[in-house]
Length: 320
Image (cartoon, rainbow, N blue to C red; front, side, top):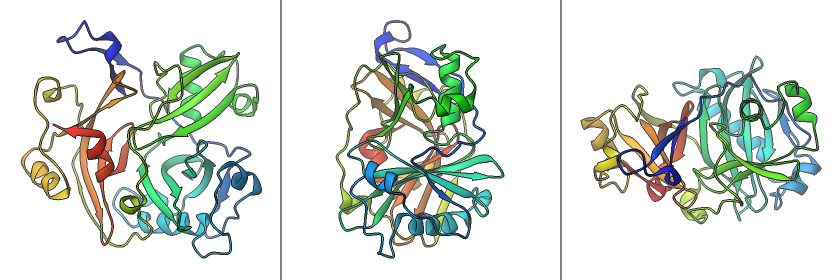
């Protein structure tokens, strides 16, 4: 995915130049030592290492355990259009960075990645489904990370994928700060690198990024996935026409405005500024998915469909 960076801002329409990293492919992550593994139809237990890494963990005696909740969401989402290969998918769960109390869940079917979920615990002992997505390029894909680091010549091409995963001298930490601040923190040869968790692009960061939004459990709760209303349009290149460069954003505060805008124009673009303005990220708006008695999710094309809670998206960017 292409990203606009503010630090190259003198070359193109006085706004910024374009930094392009080709999309990476993903053929399925191998579970690491901190993963929860969930075969279809079998309950998964939370390992002591996961609990130690991602404290606080809800009471395992509760019916709302991580594994039970994730499995319930998988079954519900598998009924929706575009999620058919989740019906038989197994999943692995990996803890996110310190302080997030969350996990990335990567789903695989017949050895291929088919999607992901970001799950975070909340104070009442339940969980929220912060975001989810489909396709072969899940958030925090180890395969994408490996190929990006080879491409950027940070590791030699002679280092195999399996050896890269097993190599403990390469620190690989997942940092999920908010809906769009998701990065790998890589420590290699006493050097820190930050890699976009979706595209695999090496980012111009020197320190851990800070979130743009604070957590708000009252608005981010999604524990039940009932019937969904979904509108999806075909993907397009947000760089084919760029109203977000010289135009004004649409006034939008919720789902009704989004529905009206999509009925008028199927080529809407979502734009967010990240990392103190160092990166501008434009993404094609594919549509939305609104759950009965739940929150709507904005669907964006970011190396595959990415479902971000609409209140979070509108608080972090604008739609053009």
